[in-house]
Amino acid sequence: MNIHEYQAKQIFADFGIPVQNGKIIENAENAISAAKEIGGKSWVVKAQIHAGGRGKGGGVKFAKDLEAVGKYAHEILGMNLVTHQTGPEGKLVQKVYIVEAVDIKEEYYLSILLDRATEMPVIIASAEGGMDIEKVAAEMPEKIVKIQINPLIGFRSFHGRMIAKTFGLNADLTKKVTNLVASLYQIYVQKDANMIEVNPLVLTDDDEFIALDAKVGFDDNAMFKHKEIAAMRDFDEEEPTELEADKYGLSYVKLDGNVGCVVNGAGLAMSTMDIVKHENGEPANFLDVGGKATAETVAKSFEIILKDPNVKAIFVNIFGGIVRCDRIANGILEATQKINVNVPLVIRLDGTNAKEASEILKKANIQNIITAESMSDGAKKVVAAARG
Ligand code: ADP
Ligand code: MG
Image (cartoon, rainbow, N blue to C red; front, side, top):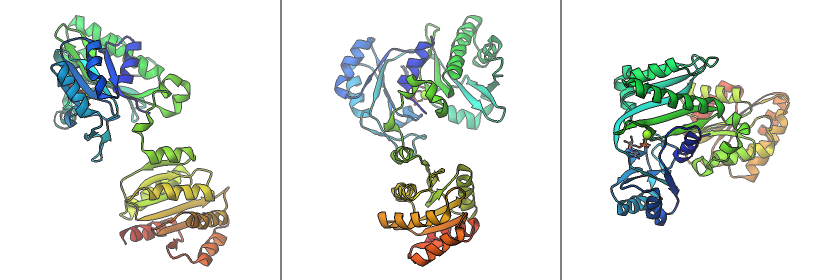
């Protein structure tokens, strides 16, 4: 689960990490009064969306006076912000954060992530922070330092000194940055975060560190422990079809291809996507109907998948263990009566009562239903069908 910058900064503040005061607004009419309340002489108006790269996309604007605050709030609220992380379709900006502008001496990059290869948290630090970190990673990877943290030992001051060395800091600032990263690490552990990114962490003209940007992601499976964080979830930021699937107990992730997949079991769903790719097709989604492969969930799956206009064919790949294939076959037929499935359906049912299922489908003699003998046969047929 991801949260917005302003929410991440609330958590930072609770852990003693310096952030700026700011105000969140949803109506541009309130921008100027918000800026007045914050105080100061100049401000920054920041789009709140669950994606980075806002600055380059035009979602972060420096306002030299109150009038400019109003102007930028009007421009940014309601805009469709396209960044390198949103994809070409962009994201609608519904909230804007107004903060005081600061005089920046240095911009650093800092993040804590889970390194799956070493099975340890890793701190990533670079003196080349700011909006071009992707370029630094691509062209000067030696400027980015990775520090593994043994979870049994946790974050220690020597880790802080390693970060300070990367940043090129004096003794006084070394102490400050060590305390700051120690607090970030506490958030990472105590709140079950799986990603904390501060880019930029800035050093101001009066030698204070401020987390100027904040991005935090959490482990969904731990959210039952953290009601206060679960409450920060912003449903407007999530794919509507994924939310609907969630209501019916379907695990659905939308992808960019044109072959829809309806599968039972996450492992089978993954291997179905693999085999579709192996046949030079592109899956349009991951969908696991779980143990509930019933007429209703199959119908719902078709409905959700068909909301994606890219889908040109659907591959139903279900293994009947506890659920019997003949019941699924009847469920599919029922589903095609309930909703208009206007693309070819390639069906592979294996396991308990597979033979009966195959007979049911053949007898029904529905034009756009194609049966498959095996998974690879099904993958070949569905990729061909999607090509037309
Ligand atoms: P994003 O990473 O999504 O582009 P940031 O919050 O990092 O958004 O802002 C982009 C850039 O804008 C920062 O790297 C920084 O240079 C500048 N910036 C952001 N907030 C402020 C501020 N309060 N004062 C001065 N400059 C700022
Ligand atoms: Mg940033």
